[in-house]
Image (tube, rainbow, N blue to C red; front, side, top):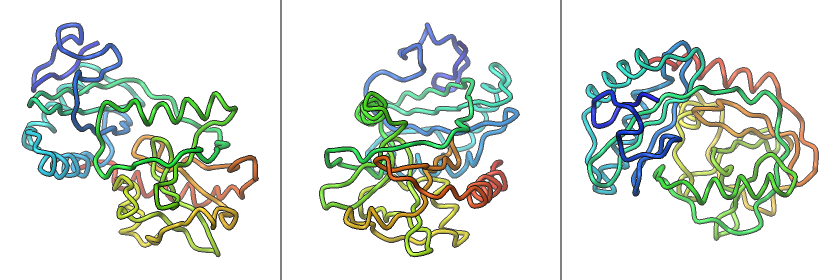
Length: 250
């Protein structure tokens, strides 16, 4: 597999990364959907990475260098529908990989993760703790999980942001509940499609409809929580996807 490592096209076997495209060590990363070799909201993702890098003392290239390298990567590894991951380690190295992606068309049945989870406003790797939550949910017979923080507030999915409909209003938890400031989440907030509000766990039964949202899935409808059926708001899901496509370039 061809990748970008520190600004140069290389074979993944020649760089310090796993075969699945993860840098060794620790750092931050961005995951981005691509359609026709065009990344969704690349500038927003780079800006978020810069904010996290500044807060965590990580050195990353300038936006122009990253954007140019992504263009070179897409030329070397083109996909009609893909997943772009850009990671920056705490030693000043960075990696970009482009891999095929398969849409998740089926709505998901989720469970509440049984333990409180310490969230993060930075998208860090290794990502094993979040992947483990997802795997535990699947072993229990569910598709995914919703996590709660130590204060008893519903936060997000295992690897996504969450929006939930309560009393006819679409809500998403605030970053003060220690949730990732997701790109799709921010676009929905900017367009006034969701309100920012904490969702205590004791309001779980009031959720009538919900979606996982992310830059990869865009909108993924939740069909049930702990086997309680939810209403599938197909029209709103399509509205989210259309809005994401509006911001797909740049």
